[in-house]
Length: 442
Image (cartoon, rainbow, N blue to C red):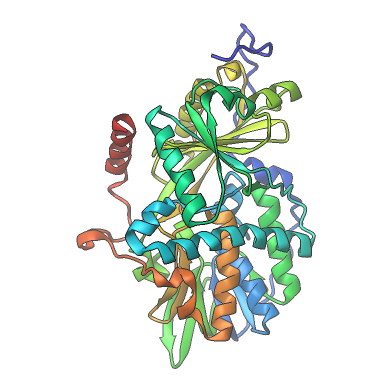
């Protein structure tokens, strides 16, 4: 184990554990103002005020469309402000798996989109002057078992030969340049990925959409979406609006208003803790290069530095966020954190929170149209960059009439096997047990 001068033999000071999102403590929140009434008619009504919906709203408005965003809570309330702030290359599914299932051309196109998604985030931040700490820090995938190193080597070779993208293998003997832990057996470094503060980013994206001319309506839950003539009637808790097009940008909170989509998306909880502020020397010891780090397990953990804190997250529980699952997950994540970083054994956890990810049944991201309702769903934890990019490009494709040509529209959004899913993920405990077994076997 790594020895650290910062490790203490006394019990850690116990700060009150705050069951709230640390990122929201870093954003400026204006006092409530009177909401504008809903318009009677718009070109596009967007359900969901996260990265997808706000990015799409900005692009629709810039293209001349009358567009509103309908958000049940506050803008960016969901996973867009609750994630780890990792802006990553690739998809949740490995590109080799995408190639094997859908062919090499689709894999190349989708991976190119993932690279373009990071550039899109960077360009929007620059154009809209969003202060969110965006840095091209890169990421490192860490080998949790010796056998994973060989898989890393194959992946690096495939990515260079087939995708034209170079990543670097890191042997265990050199891993201390990236992480102050001897818990891993090697790494795969990608210098293109980035990090940011997700709450600051989504707040900036909301302001950018508003400046472009989009109408943002928080605390406006969509109750139903019904066909009416050539368009839709969208009923909300604040009235009804007629819309030519409707976009479901609801991610893991996709609900009964779009019942068919709800049955194709699995909401899975992901949880994060933030330590108390650490000495600068200890932060540098833990993650010397400040990269985004995550391990190679199915039941993965991910971690990074921010504001002299360690942000540590993972699939501690599969069911979505409640006060009970957050508190239980905080204990699980603390144990995992101190296993990876024993030098944090005496450090207090100050914040714990959760969010709900959206997984499709093939673990892929999908763009398309179902019964006339547009959708972009299934980010599975890769939503910061990809949601921004797909919101933008989906809007542009709809305005141009080329949605069917969108790269992500080439892969249909699958239904549940045997139709045994109605929208409530009753099977998540079984999935959690299965994933743990996989990690043990592999």
